[in-house]
Length: 137
Image (cartoon, rainbow, N blue to C red):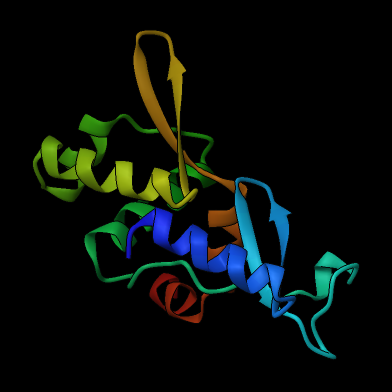
């Protein structure tokens, strides 16, 4: 479905009071309106859907590498990621844009280079995703 179609149907469901929404940083999260999920709930009690990719996929490897670099306070460039992952810069660029679109990676201009780091959401996902935790062990 296109974004327009999804927006239309979400608005219909919201007008019929079947779902409700909450702003969560860069995201808008929708929840069913029922006895266990309702507007005004403590945001800490709301479920957060899984967004993290397979840790063995290239996006998963990029997230893991950024997480490792984050531990040392380093923010790698696109070319540094490409070199470490032995992939082309174009491929890494494509996946970084996708990860940015989902709010898992952010780009920062440092000097003349763009450097990449995990967002708070991505750090939370990596800390709570069993597959990523297993990969680290």
